[in-house]
Length: 186
Length: 186
Figure 1: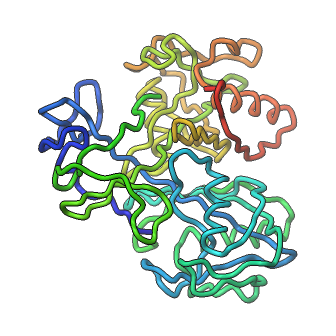
Figure 2: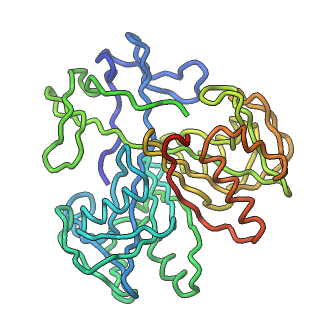
Figure 3: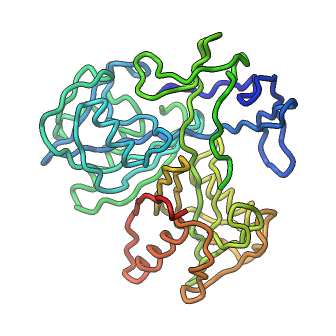
C-alpha cells in the first residue's frame, strides 16, 4: 500500500514553514506552525478489507498496481473519511473485483508500525458470481484452500488472515485475531 | 475526541495553495498542489483503548478534558504513528490512569463516520492496583457492573463496548463486535 507519510514542511492552514516540536501538554513531536499556531497531526492509516466467501471458496485479486504488482491479495484498501470500516471494505471489493459482498463479522486486525498502517479485515459473504477485475486488478478468482498461492501473496496481513481463516473454518469457530507485522515481513 | 479534520488550504510539501479535485485514476476529491503536484490525503483516525479488568471490576476514567469533560470513559486515545494498536491501547491506559495493562484480545470496532474516526477496543488485564489519575483524568476507579454510571459515559463506543462486555461475561464467550455510531449518538 502506498501513501507513505511524507515529512510535513509547510502549514496546511497558512502555508508558512512548520517546526517539529512537542506542543505544551503533548507527548509527541508535531508539525507546529509558528505563524498561525496550527498543529498538523499525523496518524496511522486504516486499510479495510474482507475475506469474501462463496461456498468453500474465497475471492482473491491479482494486483495490477504497485506495490506488489502481480501478487495476490484479498480486496482491501485505504479507508476513506466519512465512511464506516465495513462500508470501506465493501467498497474495496466493488472497486477491485466488481464484487458485491455482505460484511458479516470483524475478523483480524494487524498493525504494521514501521509504515504506520492498521489492517482491519472482515469476514464477508460474496453475494453473486458476477465479479471481474477492477482497474487495480489483473485477475480475480475464487479459490479453494488447496489452490491458495501462499508464496505469491502480496502482504503478510493477507497471508496471516487466510491461515487463520482456514484453521478456524475447520473448527467452525472464528476467533477475532490481532497481531503485528514487523520487517522483514511486509 | 478532538483533532477534527480541518480543510486543507496549503500544500504541506511546498506551501502553495491547493485545489480540491479528483486526481486521475482516483475516486475521491483530494487536496492537490498545482505548484508541486503533491497530493495530501485525509483519512480516518484510529482511537485505541481497552477494557482493563481486575477480578469482577473494570477500570473507568473521569475525563479532565474536553470533549465530554467530567464524563466517564475507558482509557482510550488517538493511535500514534509507529506504534501498534495494542501498544497504543496500553499507552493510553498508562497516560490516562497510570495503569499497567496486558492486552488480551481484540474486542470491539466502532466506526464514527461523521467525524471520520474508528474506535478499536481490546479486552485487557489490569496488572496491579497502583493506578491513579493521569493528567487527562479527574478520577480513576474500578467499578462493578452495577456501579457503572451508564448515563454519565462520555462516548457511545464506550457505552456499547461495556454493554457487550457485561453481556458476554455472563456467557463466558466474548464475541468480536463491530458497529457504527451515527448522530445523535456520539
